[in-house]
Image 1 (cartoon, rainbow, N blue to C red):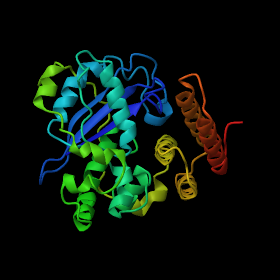
Image 2: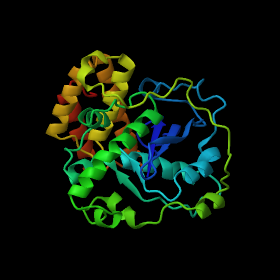
Image 3: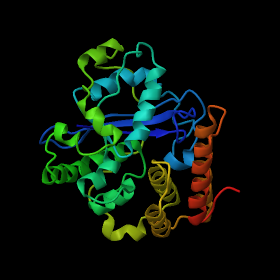
Length: 319
């Protein structure tokens, strides 16, 4: 099993956002999670959203481009189902970045699952943010870098396995019939193989990596009993952004998600400045995605109005 997380310069790969950090964590049967790939990425342009991920232009100097490490990524994901918390986000960036690399015209999308949407499917809880899921399972939320988010998901995986067994979904084939989500259909696809790895020029040593200089913080032990003391403006900004993106992943922020986001604002002491910046960034990214073809349809216009109304209920929306 592989767990992947990207940090990016924006919300949507379709609107031109690029990857600035990638981490892959593998969990072999009866083994502990292991970080097998962790590096900053040169986005070949300005680094945006620094207030969210803490990465700036200077950090990525000398880092490999995505195309440089794609071969090793395929090798790290070999013979594995890929998991991410908001998988549509990460898989969209994997697909978009891969298209920019040479020799990738036949590269397939790997089988993948979405840990966010699997929560209600397995009876774990309603769809929620990664931070809220970590809180439920007694884990330290990954709120600082890609490796920490991927590790948090990997340690959370045992709870998913237990829930899947109880629900009668003990195999990938059984799980693929559990609902109508698109990611479930991918479980019938073949995983990346050595052939995929070789065809795009992958090597066992590959391009030199450039991970962040600070150490990775383990998702264990739990910090849930001392949550109110973990208030840092940068971490609060990033956690709130991630929760907002995850809540809007299906194109609508419903009333229960609004209440959860309000609770997060209180718990993390989200300032008015952070709230306004985050709401503006989300609305701008949505607008860019809908307008990229030069036309905003009636449906897209309604989604923008709904998004603005939800953001207004959360405290502020663009005028």
